[in-house]
Length: 88
Image (cartoon, rainbow, N blue to C red):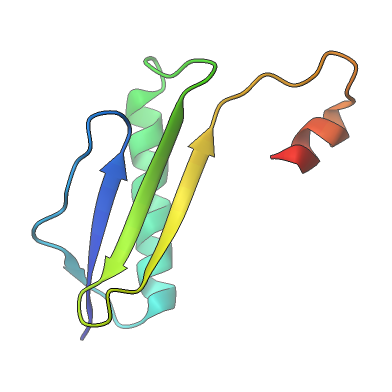
């Protein structure tokens, strides 16, 4: 079963040296989304405008990766809520 590593970059850079075996890329993606949600929830009091945060997931054998990124940015005052959402 492939092993995936979940590395966090939030200014402190947390490298996953252990990884997690997942049956497929889809399973790794589901784990990444759960992990990202938990991390964002934990750091919610520290995050502010202009902050960026990412979770990079790397598969051990192929070194293929995908990222989940979070950017907190102000919306233009004249933009509608829908425009603000579509720009993200």
